Length: 443
Image (cartoon, rainbow, N blue to C red; front, side, top):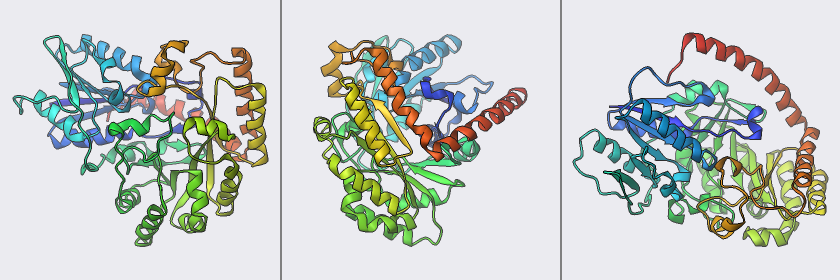
């Protein structure tokens, strides 16, 4: 049985520079799971030039983020026309909360569980090795009718590890801003916090499962990467987590350069451990500050205090840990609100940051509450860079102020270095793409 695994991607305004370019880790997991069933597996990802092989697939699996919803359905239609007998499976984090939006005549299964066993059972069913399969963790189309499957929770982290030959094949093309050769690892499922705007906390039916720091480090240290990005929604959620990570790291003489997510309140409560965490490899943290006023944070149920943020930033700077700060601007912002955020960035000398537009994401309660106020239902506009609800300011003024905030990034030596690298990278990539087109490339 031949299985194609494809990542559907929607372009955003940042696609021109691609500040973050990393392997499709979910496809690496799916490849390993599919090969466990004996399948012949090919990964397709246009971003990395992983093209379709010259064979006919028995199964096509398509994943993608919320912005790629329409792309996924378009890809399913195209493949159905080309290969009428192919069985098409849709999955991924967006499908997990929005499975019914993929109930298309061109789709056979929609997986809405994080359990890899669900995917493996579907492959065995398609291959004829299972006569029947009760829908649990997936929906299926049968004789033109959709059968809705029950929920299936992940009760433990999967024993299947991702196929790291993908990491090896793509590592030279990856980056996180100015940092090159970046690989991904994942430890947790879900998130222990309850921020109202967050989609990830709802995954796995809202049930959070912690990872094992020893396993994370074992996996990270085996990778031929300069940096390893732990893509859990939060890396260390408590002091016990921090001590467990330190204990696991101290068992290794080798160190790995980690990029990971932390919360500001964790940094404040565990300031005495920050230097030790840096020694153990935590070189960059991504912190979701979100806003600079407590009234906004209370509205998000963030449960942090904006007055503490300057101290958290100072602690990271003293520990020599790089910071990427995340902020959101509300469509309700006035000019004074944009100026307040700009002043905060400048006064706290934050060089690397992102600013997103507060956006209700399909699959959350906030989306249902705002449904009647949405300006568009085009999935590609829900990329946190476009207004999807009416702003308080005239839209051109809102976007002008939004752009003005981003121009502050040019003060950062790190961002300027990234832009210079990016210009060189684009030239090299064009040459490489031309060569690969001539030679052909598949994975």
